[in-house]
Image (cartoon, rainbow, N blue to C red):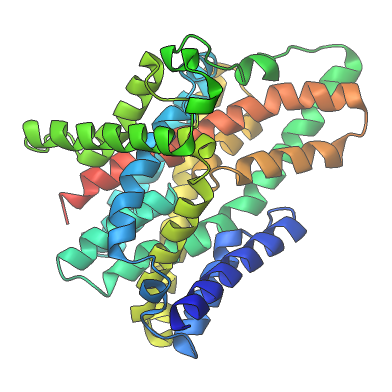
Length: 391
């Protein structure tokens, strides 16, 4: 019964976070609420081994991470990235702006290890935070291992309102253009969501495309990535290879698009990973949490300033509005589905006319989705893999 009770506590913490996020239209991130529940729980009634009792311990995470990274590779649409190259450029260079200020000014204010531990989670998501936390624990910096988790708690709270303001300004600008007849449209959403139909796997009868068959192929690709990393003596990090091989084997037709979704296990894995990430909070104390508040605030402020400066300069060169450029850069603080939800909520708030809504959606949603994927799913994982070597 202890295992079932622990599993229930984990799921309640996660769904309450999801409900609050839905109720507030993503203004309050689900991960923030879930992390607050975990941290208060660990300080009060939760046993320190709650997550292990719920069967989401180290062994689960060691399986979960490579599978999710391969899956992220299968979710990439290379044609979409090519069409939205401006969003890719702004989001990546925005992260570079964050790195520049945090690694210089931030390292002058705090020690370098603190900055290296915090930044990947600040510009990324659950996976990059997990990579940093695990590495810090492995080298004995257990107190610092909570910092990436704290950053995951707060970066959305910091980024959501600023992004919402930028998107609302951009939506009103586009609305004015639409009403005046001075319009230009991006690729249609139908093109953005086009399915990959050339795969030889598609030739199999549907009855044989079972979840186990999909999952077995994802696991095989992860093993190939591991073998490749060993062969080159980890010159390219195993996690990066999982992501890269996910892209390659999807393009070759060995894996389906969004493989783990089609296998029906994505939510299970991501919920387990969320629980494992917040397991790091079991070592935190109120005093330790409060002691990291200055680092969190200062690094977030420096990071956002870096994003703004780069996006402002690059937007002029790429002939984008500074509001849209800044919003795309800020996707590193959001990720999916927050970037999707925020953009749609802003559009619905600005206009009720179906034609205007369609025009705003076509011009705003694709760059936001591509920007979020580029930073959270690709850049942050690469940054975490590199930073680990310097800790």
